[in-house]
Length: 165
Image (cartoon, rainbow, N blue to C red):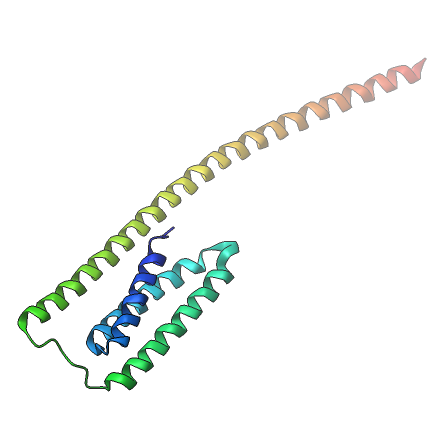
């Protein structure tokens, strides 16, 4: 369904690891928050995965544990008072990055919604066809039942006629 979210999560996790290693606490926190959002979307997707559900949920649990470990490490290394971008340009770049990430998530969500709507329409079409088939089969069963009653009546009459001889 949304296979593009997994690579995006991997990229964001890699960026968060790099930010934690570089002791860029503010950047790390924003990347970790983005990871949390992507994990939430992937958890929703995993619930509908069918046979692959357990594998996906186990993988997501591992990734969630990694995000938590990175968050703990970031807080230990950078402390609670994270450095904020010093210049207006840096703040603008950070805001633009968050806006772009939000836009990507909105587009991904819209694509998921479109896919779900298409699936729903296909299911409704199939249900309509199944209903028509069942109505036709029911009509055939009624017709066959009537024919069997006529045949039984004729066979009974013939048996009575034959027994007279």
